[in-house]
Amino acid sequence: MEYIIYFAITIGILVFVHEFGHFAAAKISGMRVDVFAIGFGKRLFGWNRKSGFSFGELPKDFDGEGNTDYRLSLLPLGGYVKIAGMIDESMDTSFAEKEPQPYEFRAKPVWAKVFVITAGVFMNLMLAWAIFWGANFFQQKIILDTTTIGPVPQHSLADSVGLRSFDKIISVNNKKVNDWQELVNALYINSMGENRNLVVKRNNETVKLSIPNSKMPDQTDKYLIEPEGMSKPLVDSLVANMPAIKAGFLKGDVLIALNDVPIYSRQQATEIIKANKNQTIISTIQRNGDSLNISITPNESGVIGVFFYSKFEGPTKYKSYGFFESVYYGWKDIEKVTALTFSMVGKVFSGNVEVGKAFGGPIKIAQIAAKSADTGIASFLYFLALLSLSLAIINIMPFPVLDGGHLVMILIEAIIRREIPIKIKMAIQNTGLVILLLLMAFIIYNDIISL
Image (cartoon, rainbow, N blue to C red):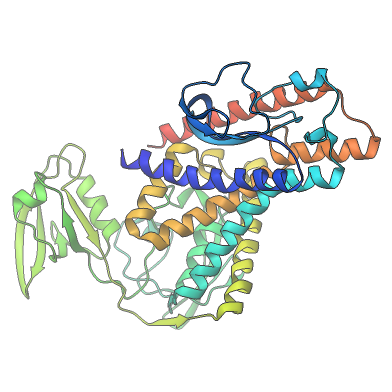
């Protein structure tokens, strides 16, 4: 239910902002907007000036006489604005049998059509920019001022690729890294789908390592390494009626070891616990300066019902920006994410990155939205900005049904100086819609199998 709520909030905001762009631009251009819908399919309820508030579908012969019907529809996977005289997602072509009216999309000049079609993308872009600006202006950036990794347990993934405790990573794929955020971006994001070539400083010697892409963790919440200076895992909260609370764990306990294996990170603790389903393990904890041993048996899912967290106790530095600096760096954030998005698309087409890892459907959006909301409003807004920017980039691509596809047809009509026949437009729209639905089904399938 939490996932559904946060998915609805996230999609609702993004769709409203995008469709409001089309709506406002159409009104400014003197076009009639018949429908402003959040969601697709059957009308659940809505309001317009002519008939007021009502539930269910409007009569088939309903004529709003220029008044927009604001509605909520059944399928919360998007939305649309129905502009008079335009072939769109509604597939309504009844207007084609009549002479163009001055308030219709098809009767307007090219500049007005382009303005209306690109307005949704523009609004998504502005939302992302506003959030990035706010993140830079209102929040100090906390930078973990290190590229030295923490302890590397024996037989861990990091150990298997040749990393050793307290290696200082100098560069990744020939790009120098100056702090932990740059290292994370270089290691997990910028080089996704590629082998990682590292230069590390170890005991005053320079060592070169190559990490095959197949060795990199698949999950976004699983990391190969953690920075030097992370505290041992602390108990943040406990789940009722689960093994940990029954065994006597308390909030604030520090996990020192499991079965006499020293614990350095939350990930290491989680892996050991999951590997001991229905088996009793001895956990060594520190509480109020005392060391205690507690026997605990993970359930059949390899879970004990503890949320661990770790504090960074190493060197940090802070960055803050003024009003106009934040505007500039907000735009730089957009440039970085856009470049990364196109790079990721290129890697998908080249076969270096799987589609399921590069793109997420409603299930993945719901999961990430819920996690970011739990972390705090700032994290949720940042995720919203990334999603809004992604929506803008995808929508401007020259693909039928998307805004970019409509834009291409408008430009072609401007060049040939006549309207493309309705039948051709409908065939293009239908083909694009089928392909888009198949792609969405494939992405949803990938979401499900990755659960």
